[in-house]
Structures are given as structure tokens and as C-alpha cells.
Length: 447
Image 1 (cartoon, rainbow, N blue to C red):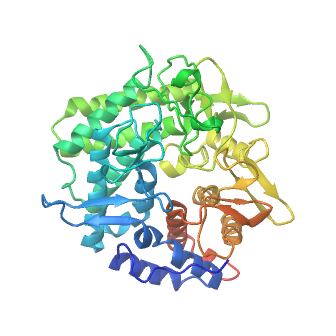
Image 2 (image 1 turned 60 degrees about the vertical axis):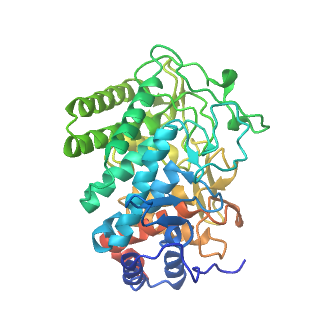
């Protein structure tokens, strides 16, 4: 397959991103790694952004597709622009583009806080026949706890990076109230809540068991997530990485509300829920594994059942330090990391002859490794040798395209899924930019 090239006419161009691109690229000795960075880091801006500087009311609006699926996922879109936040004060056009996405997220959440993916206005979706409360503005309506958490993370990161408060109007606050109400509903303390989902499909993980309500749970303070960030149905309803992410996001939301609104009661509610979920994680989601000892389970149900695994998507157990829930040297995290990066994780695949290994997902089946899991392994590592090995494997995974993919066959990287997956591309760019600042020797030959 021939190498990809940046488009002659990008969807959005940022002078600050281009300057960062040139500066970091000049510090990379390996031509193949340099090419990979140059094509991946700006891929979101090059190929996925639909930006309107003025929506008719004097405000920016931004719609970001995932790549080969022309819909906006709350998770993906927030993650796709995240690596550009440090540059917002250098580029007002870039700042307004991200502000438009923060505003768009609020509109999406007000439309339906349970949905994961949205059309750009009323439009067609291949999932319009799903047995849930579908409407023309929705691309898909899978309840994934991480989706609103990503919207909060982006809003908080935007505010911290830019100092701009213009997206944080009454509409944004109303969207956050809807999010908090939804998270409380999905603690399922009194009933199952309003969310139900069924799809006519031969793919088991694409619909929910128990007539669309998901498997049984015992209310213990955790928040149910019917689907994982891979868009696969959860086996046990309390998805632990997403509950950890919710703790972080709720505390970020409380900080935003304290700083920008006269709503101390609402901020206190956010903190109280964060504390409750955090305590429930410590009580119900840290369990003993027969090999690795005390670890974070991937999913639990409140009855004492636990699923030991990790998935290549984010949030994952591997990503908990990256998302800000625990320190990288936390003993429970270290044990969990050892489990995730071993064959005690059923979704960890390796090929010793090729020198490739990483975490995959039921979403892409065996033996497909997600480059995102290799990037996250490097982003959460403090070991030069481990990070360098991740860079080597990432280079080996691109099948000559100069881009990241959703997954690749650990025995044959030329076999991959999703040739155009902007989140993985931009996340790789984030890794290289971080290494240029913190471990520049790893970008030099012999480093």
C-alpha cells in the first residue's frame, strides 16, 4: 500500500499546529518516524473538522467526524482535538475552533445525554431502526458513561488552556445539569432508569441482554454504562475505567462551576457524586486476582462478580494515570498494568518472532492489537526502554501507510481495520510531542 499524504486543502489549518509540527519533526532523526508524526499529528485538522466561525449568532460552531464514519462521537471528537489545547493562546482561530466544539457538545448533550454519536443536524443513520429513543439528529444511541466525561474533560481543558469563558453560557450549564441527572439515573438506586436499547443484529455485543436493560446489577454507588468506549455492550454493568473517569470529570465540572457560575449547590452535588463513586470503586472494584493480587477489575456488578481484562480503547485500565485518576506508581495500578500487559488479559496478543505485542478488543476480535493501546502504554510509562519499544511497534504497525489504524493483526500488520481513524493518529502525535519535550533523546538515533 502506498504512503498517505497530507491533503492539499486541509479542512482546517492552524499556524500554531504547523509551527509545532515543523519544530518537533526537526528533532526526529528516523525518517520513518518523522513521516509518521508529520502525517498523524495534524490529521484531525486536515481531514475531520467542519468549522463555522459564526453560527449566525456571533458564536463559532464545530463538528468533528471520526474519520471514515461521518458522525460526531462525543468521545472521539473531544480526544481528537485534545493534543492541540496547549497551543490555543498562540492561535485565535484554533481557539475558536475548539470553542465551537465545546458549544456543539453542549447542544448534543441537551438533545440527548444518553447518545454517543450525532449527525450534523437531522440526517440519515444506519441505526435509525434501533429500538431505543432514536431521532434524526442521532447517529447512534448507545449509553457510554465515558461520552459525557469526555465532553467535560475537553471543556475543562479548554478553559484551563485558553482562559476563555465564552462557551460557558446558560446552555452549557443546562447541558451539565442534564449530565448530572443522567449519571444519577444510571446509579439505578431506585429503578432501572429510562434507558433501554435493542438492535436486530447477529453481532452479540452490538445489543443489550435482558430485553434491552443490560445484565442485572446491585446498586452500590457506581454508575452503570451499558456500552464500552469501543461501542461494545458491557458484560457486567459497572465499567470500572469509565467510573474512574467519571470521578475525575465530576471534580473538573465542579471546578468549572465554582469558577464560572454562582451555583455552589450544583458544584457541591458534583463533588458529592464524585466522592460516592470513588468510594464505591475502592470498595467494589478493587479485587484479588490469583496471579497479580489486588487489581482494578474491568467490570463488576455489585454482587461480587468481576471481569479481569483490559480493552485497547480509552478509558481503559491502562489509561488511568493519563486520565488523572491515579498516579502511575500507585500499587494497585501497577498490579493492574502488569495484568493488562500479560496473557492473563484475554485480549493481549503477541508475536515473539515479529516482536509485536499489545492489547486488542472484542470489537475487532483476535488477534488484532490496537495502536491506541501501544500509545497509551508509552504515555503511562516512565521507562525509556519500554517507551522506545512502543515507538518501534507503532512504526511497524502502519503497513506503509504513514498513519495509525484502529487495529492490526499482530501476526501480519498489513491486515488492519480502519484506514482513516483520526483519534489514533492525533493521539500518536500527542505522544511524540510529549516525548520531544520530556524525553527528546528517544527521538534521536541510538537514543
